[in-house]
Length: 180
Image (cartoon, rainbow, N blue to C red):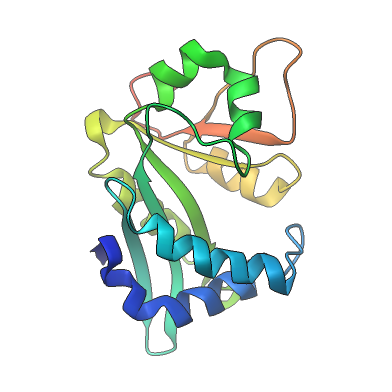
């Protein structure tokens, strides 16, 4: 199920709970303040152009979710965006990311993993990406997450020489520049 814009805020408490379960564990180890920041970010993110949330739900509640929006012409300077810009350079950011669907958060509860939940959430969001252009970034240290994106056919964007840092950028399997 996909929710567009601020409609998802009706489920904010459950989303924050899911986020907390997933991202307080290794390799993320986020603390209470960072989890609280996600709650505030979610409220602001719902106002981004093209914001949407894919939800996986069962009798247990929210099993997982993913959020996305359309990447603006200028990457923000907060979070890991400076690392993305440094690795790709301005020309590749424009070519690969601007106007594409940026998948920001993907969180699947432990009990719902290895059942295709993450795959389904990514596929649902990427299905209506403009021109099949979707991307996601993750922490290089998150070996299981990196392996999952690769297994699902997402393509890692090679950093410019000498610019590798703590993040990796992946393009959706159908992104026109994937594998180039």
